[in-house]
Image 1 (cartoon, one colour):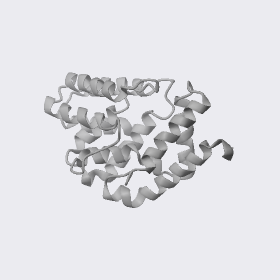
Image 2 (image 1 turned 180 degrees about the horizontal axis):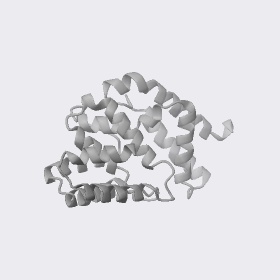
Image 3 (image 1 turned 30 degrees about the vertical axis):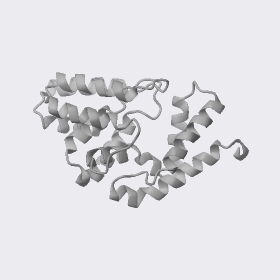
Image 4 (image 1 turned 135 degrees about the vertical axis):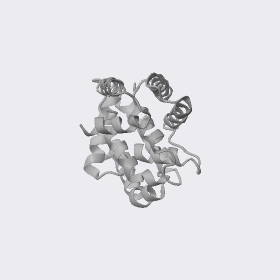
Length: 211
């Protein structure tokens, strides 16, 4: 399995024992496979990791970025406001148990917390890589984007249609109001226009007059 190989390779940088690597992977798979997840699944993690590989030249601490990617959505409840904090706590506990040095865990925790608002300082290249990878889905082809948007709606099935439209439109418009959605030069060059077109298209579908 490609995902396991990636997980194993990343942890082998720290000399973690094989049995511990396999058990931790099993725990992560279980966390990302709960029935209430439709978008925030292992498929999303795989897409994020693949994009990080594409952007790795921009990263300073590539291993930290990859581990943050693994954990950034490990706790996900669409009705909660502290998923990133909970995911960071989960990561700190598991990585500590695996014997990862505290200094590394501190960096990984900070990266996870930056996914809450998807904002990074201009010199924080590792956060920029992680955030661009996390938002890469916004620039996929229109068919994939519609599947993504549908999956997000399923995760918020507890909201009424009106509540969802109001909240979702606000999220999309906040991204469109940014000077740039993507931080890294490569993603800005190849993905910015596609992402903005997809966001605009989804906003139109949320307008009742277009239904």
